[in-house]
Amino acid sequence: MQKKPFITKEKAEEIIKEIPTPFHIYDEKGIRENARRLRAAFAWNKGFKEYFAVKATPTPAILKILREEGCGTDCSSYAELLMSQRCGFKNPEIMFSSNDTPEEEFRFANEVGAIINLDDITHIDMLQRVCGIPETICCRYNPGGTFSISNQIMDNPGDAKYGMTRPQMKEAFLRLKELGAKNFGIHSFLASNTVSNEYYPKLARILFELAKELREETGVNITFINLSGGIGIPYTPDKEPNDIMLIGQGVKKAFEDILVPAGMGDVSIYTELGRFMLAPYGHLVTKAIHEKHIHKEYIGVDACAANLMRPAMYGAYHHITVLGKENAPCEKVYDITGSLCENNDKFAIDRCLPKIDMGDILVIHDTGAHGYSMGYNYNGRLRSAEILLREDGTFTMIRRAETVDDYFATLEGFWDKV
Ligand SMILES: *Cc1c(COP(=O)(O)O)cnc(C)c1O
Image 1 (cartoon, rainbow, N blue to C red):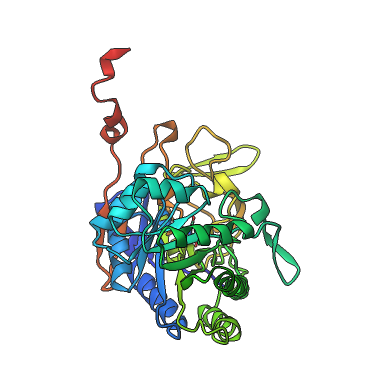
Image 2 (image 1 turned 90 degrees about the horizontal axis):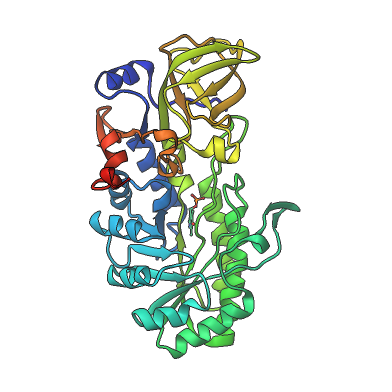
């Protein structure tokens, strides 16, 4: 698979005339088409809903597009709840899947009508104290051990801080029932960034069996199963993208095998995808501003890890295209660096690329999720602007770049105190 940017050199140059690099740009058309594919894949389930994981791309213009495509939001903090509320999401369009949750966030989640997904059994009493137990409630499950698909370990739930054990799930449901809950949901997130059509179907089987058992053991009315996030994208060009239609069919098969015979065919399926919804539809656009020839060949760009942390944080691969040189031979080997005083501030290491000239525009792929949102201010670097490429080819700035005044804003009134 060749990774093709969704903008051309000409379009990038047109935008850069108005908005200097670096910036993140999002592809409205791609976002909408993908959201529609997801809906089609789960159209067999009457109550299906995707609650977009706000943390992936907490940008109102993006949330509004997703809302138009029928999505809700999944939040885990006060700010994310508030953003969802301000974007017009209301009950039952907000999921609150938090952990280590402050009291006041439960209160606010309840106030905005979010479905509360409890990460721990001890949160029941806290929630009861803070705002009472709502009629609809969800519990997060952690089976422990490792999670494998076809004998390959995908992730390690036993090491993850999230969710409740199997005995706790039963106890939690009984206690919540006693406190007045009427509609129950089950949530679990067992593996991240899976590039496999088998993840959701396998997870669904585990949760459907659990739902059946819990209903028998506790007599509660289970109304939804939340498969949460974890469907990944191929960051490297050698990987095949997930086939969401196949994934939807796999979950349907599990549903028909397990829930339908148990008389639970009216259970709704929810998802909380972040990466799958947005990552491929965002680019970080940056310019080559330095070349350096020492023990290795370096190209310095005007973006840095403050704009995209994944390579520095996880050693993550992000594909890079030099605009206008899409078909040029990859005859050079470069490290592509940002300006942070940290040697891990490299967007690529030993990457084969066409010869890069100063002023060339580079597209860093797959930054639409966990890109801008993980940005930070280390070294006094500022977060970039965000731009939406509309379906008609025009563009709109949907968030301005930070200025040094933003950076200093929290010092207001403190300049003279030292
Ligand atoms: C991060 C997260 C998601 C989204 O994960 P992706 O890998 O981006 O799909 C969904 N649910 C919860 C609770 C999360 O923490």
